[in-house]
Every structure is written in C-alpha cells, then in structure tokens.
Length: 334
Image (cartoon, rainbow, N blue to C red; front, side, top):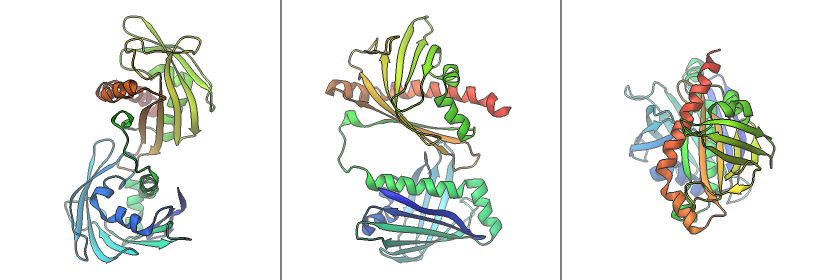
C-alpha cells in the first residue's frame, strides 16, 4: 500500500510531488532507472512509454516517447546530471528541438520512511520561470499527471508477483473523451444517460432500472437489430465518485436472475468490470476512462473462452465507446 503525502505547486517556479511507498528503497530506485520497469508505470493514466535509449550515468541521456490514450506521441529527453544510488537522481528534462517544448530540472530523493520497507519519494521540479511552470501545468496537466504517475507506480509496487494464468489476464481498453470528468462519470452512472449510448453499435437499451449504491443493480433490456431482447445486469461493488466504478456483470432475465450467454454456453456466468476515471493529463484535456474486465468464479473452460475472446471484445467495446463519444459531443457543445 502507498500513501500520497503531498502534491502541490510549492513556489512560483516549482512543482513538488511526494509519496510514500510500502516498498524497499532499492526496489523503488530500480523502478525509476530500468527501462523495462519504467514502461510499466511512467506517465499518467492511459499512457504508455517506449524507450529509444537510456544511459544511466552523469551526462547520459534517456530518450523516450510517451503515447497518450488518444494515440498522440510526446517525444521526451532526460539528461542525467547526478546519480547517487539509491538516494538521489538529478536530471534535466528537455533541451532538444526535437522533443516537447519544456525545460526544467528535477531532483528525485529516495528516503527510508520509518523502516527499510517504506520509501518516501520526493520529486522537486524547478522551472526557469513562473510562466514556464504555468505552461506545463496548463498545457500538459503536470500536477494531475504527476499524481497519476506516482499512483501507477504504487500500483506496480503493490501488485502481486504471481504470474496469472492465460485465462486470468484482464481485458483492458482505454479511451479519452473530450468532455469534463463530471459529465463522463454521469454518463456511466445515470440511467437516462446509459439508455442513450450503452451497448455495441446497432443495439439500444429499451428498458432499464438503476440503483447506484454498493449492492445495487443496473438491470437493462438491450434490443438488437433483429428486434430480439437481451437482458443483463450490473451489481455494483465499489463506487468512488468520479474516480472508480466496479461491478459484477452477467446476463439475466427480466427478474434479474443470472442466465447463460444466449450464444456461448461456456461464457463466464459472472465477470468483474472495473472502470477508472481520470482527467486526461495531455494536450487537449478531457477524461481518460480505463476499463479492466476479468472473469470471476469461473471454470477453466470459461476462463479460456474469455481469454480467446479479447479481439471480439475489443471490437464490441470500441463501438460502444464510439457511441458514448457521440452521446457526449452535443452535451459538451452546449
């Protein structure tokens, strides 16, 4: 478990981010200095990082590209100034015409916090001027992006080291919506919104009831192009407004009794869907939604079918996300 201690604009030229991780200092250091580990957490929600090259020494460079959830690529360059393993990193960000137009220096310190298995990380970014600091906050969402990045590191450090079986690997899909976080949250949690966009292209929800409380249910009837009704339900597990929504998903009848998939008898009876909502910390703003989906209480055959269906799930969810995008567009334009 990791605890966010502080995340703030500390002075007119600085941004300071601090977080305590329940992990040894050496492990946290490795997460900051090894490309294979950085690829698993560096960047805000929905971003991925691809390293071109890294030379971890004073005067060495780390050149990398960050890919946003909307597909935009951000070329970056870090030049290391001081490396004192495992207590201090000092580097310059930017400084090349081929990378993003930002220039600042960062000092990262790694301190034992109450024991060898707890590490306090402080990232102090110093900009040439207040305007330069304000530019990265405004254009790149630097403060929110920093918070999200350290949260991703916390998740990596606390994740189970056990390698999941093939059928246990989650299906994930990420999308950026050019709409405020509050509106996107409402679109996923209010009956009238859901009835206007939820479901693959060519389908529509014609009946629905929703009780947005832990243990509550979203029960709906979806009509396909052939006029046939399919009933389904969500049972809400976790609701953190504008941050996280988790629910157990299943096919059902009109009385909310669980039924088998009408066209795939070995589809899991229940799946767990977890949605994470965050402000898009990239150019253009908006809201990043990450969907993670796994089978639960499933047999080996059910898990195998779920794993084999990722491609078709991506196709279906892509269409569904496009319907949400179309639903949001006129609401944002008002």
